[in-house]
Length: 452
Image 1: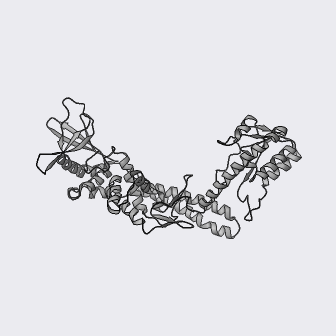
Image 2 (image 1 turned 180 degrees about the vertical axis):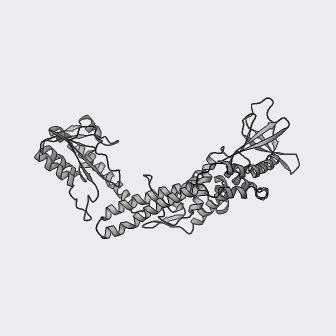
Image 3 (image 1 turned 135 degrees about the vertical axis):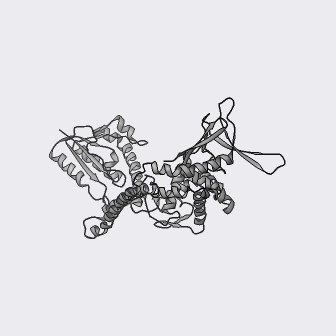
């Protein structure tokens, strides 16, 4: 007696399953795909492998048929019922191997082999389960078809956009607010400052979590992201350019490495200086004399365990020596570091993108000549566009090619002296990971630890 298996899958919803997934010694595996399972007129097209399975079972007795889920037998409850009846008439016992969470499969788990009276007793309950599963599948197929057509996902459009029938469209009344938010973040590298800026200029109050979602939302970069994790690039007009988006990502990665509440600190050295004696971070404190307008800034350890405790040091003195050290040490550090050949890497990624775009451009002629049908071509185009989006993401994460030229520019002391404290904070954190304050009797010196 034969043991056979049947697989049915939709390429829009899942990868094509491996025929060797059963763990049993299977005589033959029959596999159908859902592509063109339903015609444009709504009539069901027969599954070729299923028809072959029935013919083979009539020609040669079969003991067991393995399937993953009962709903894979058909696109409707009636179809599933008819095919279960056909199996019973052929004397084939059905074994269901997977249990779907939240469905009726506990019945199947208790009685995995359905035949005769057992099948009749559980048929009504089983068909109710199939009806729920098929309804869920149709909804997911609709969402999947929208992904293939690069349509926006369901739900309200993000702030700054409005929905049209086929894409997101820039909302001229709200998009300038979002653009100004991005510009403010790019200028100073502080999410809290950008949020306060919107509240002050536009009376637009948003939470920091909302601002962070804006900064990371692919929609503002002209891309569409879906719940399954797929991303399609260039689906609509962007508010943030690719270069600006790459800078936003670098700033967010840099801020994650900083101590909490220092990304928006008003002083450029906040969160960077560490005492070498007690290994405590140093915070900026302000001291003012009574009835005097002038205030004095100091850096002092926040959690010193020494006895006596490490003393505070004037902020301006540390700032001045930091500028001197970065002007002297940065060019040497850049020259000594073994940087990857970013230009070659970019060239390789751009070549891979161009190759996929060339394949994408070949699909319309193949459809015209009849080599590919519409559904297959749409699915192939969707996969190519998601692969291109992944490559573009890798391209955006690469560092600037001209790092040595940038190091030469920022190694001029006047460059730093002409900056405001927020601007200086921005550039310090682009290059410096930590500043170690080394105390030597009555004197001290600084050691800079760069990002590379």
